[in-house]
Length: 267
Image 1 (cartoon, rainbow, N blue to C red):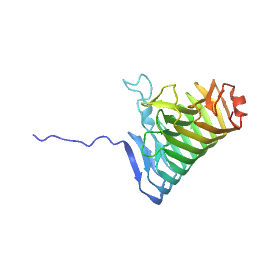
Image 2 (image 1 turned 60 degrees about the vertical axis):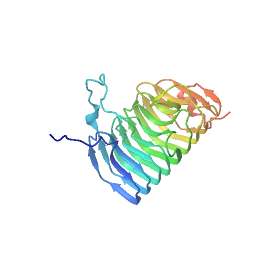
Image 3 (image 1 turned 135 degrees about the vertical axis):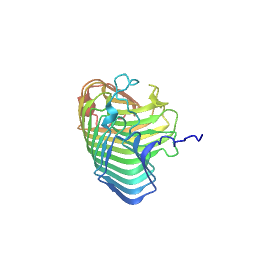
Image 4 (image 1 turned 90 degrees about the vertical axis):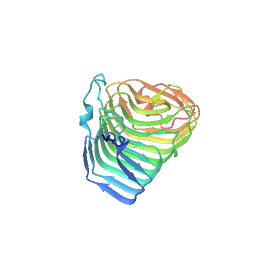
């Protein structure tokens, strides 16, 4: 009797690769089972007017202990891409709304992100390309999500993150971190022990405002000497505690209003 074989479950629902001077627009994608978009090795790609609706993933099952059963449902995973624009897009999911792991000159504008892990750089380190240079997240909302603005790197790996700007970002109902920069990821989780071989420099948060439902307004945990030139302008996130360590060697624990006045964090 013949046996049936089936292809392995794909890692991403849609793979966009090796595209130049192209445009993707006005798609409505409902209840995708894995990461939705992988965008790799593109130049001058424009993505606009998409709806990624993964609300079915919010339902719990017997193994999820009352939490959403879906995981690894990233909206857009971007790597090794240059001059990319992602705009005017709505995402309801249970993981990163957008995650940039390598590339340059990337603009993410006017996104609505609900239910996931926020607007992310990383994780950086341990991949074939570990350089991010020139990413702007702007004019976007992150609602009922674990994180708002996040940059994370893997422990004991190398890489570079330069010139990242979060501007005009509205947060609401954030459960873990409003602004999160961590250099202590290992095996997919945070260890609390950061390393310093991934350099994170020239990071700006401008007019980032909103509320936490739990967790920390700001959590910045860097390795010794690996984070520099962090700029906070008109940042006001209210809710719970704040922690900053090793930004230009300083250790700062202050209220959100005081942290927002540290225009340049340096020794």
